[in-house]
Image 1: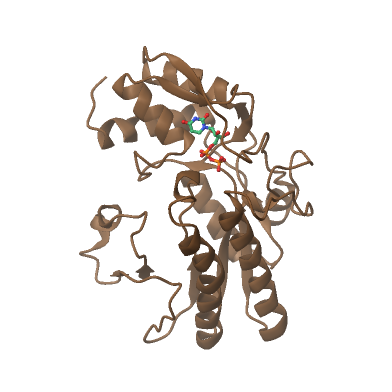
Image 2 (image 1 turned 90 degrees about the vertical axis):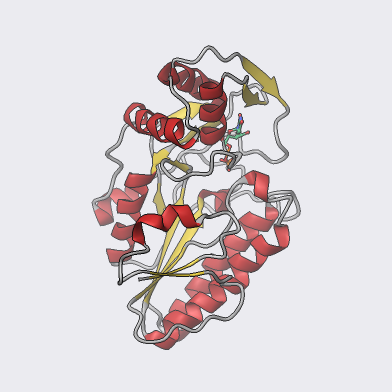
Length: 287
Ligand code: UDP
């Protein structure tokens, strides 16, 4: 297995347990540049991209490039090697959705020129590239649309809601709810996401599959749940709502359930308990 990462948001520590494995290689490269891999390749799994909204203003050009040029290079690699290709796409292709919950047939409501445009439109282009290589070159492609996911190995300063709430709750800082906290998300534990990715890769169908949780919560409810799970006495404070922040998000996962037999198995309560253990150890705090 060759992992390719320029570590712009990743870290060597995340694969430290694999470095002694002779079957594993970490290549510190940016897939936005052309990439050659020696020998046979069976599968290309294209997950590269910063994905936290706090990364969007600081590296918008890299994000557009990895979604477009990076996808082009990885599809080229799959074509050259006769490999199957999996694109990690995103619920952001639906933008601030006007249809709820979101089925794969919904085309979305994306602002191309707003602060999230670099990520959303690059991923939409990545899907278009993937379907083009499927149709024009017969590459065996798959697309998964990943909804909000959390769990072990997230950056504690990632800026997304789960790392923020846990860091704040565990260190006694105020917990920052943006807007009035009525916006919703459905949070999938990373272990379920991984089984979902493998199910999509194994699946029969190049059309997109939503992979995510059905348990939808408001961001204010989530703050109170994290506060309870951590036993924190942090106060909950309200801050400005970021521009173009989607108001509601929950996947319609009927296709994944019916075609792949996949559904999440880890409840939010269980997933947040596991996340609590991880963030405690990552932040070296004791409750
Ligand atoms: N959010 C929040 N407080 C935080 C971080 C995020 O209320 O400290 C909200 C954010 O406004 C959004 C939701 O939580 O409505 C999820 O944000 P995140 O950045 O995790 O991912 P998104 O789904 O927006 O890409």
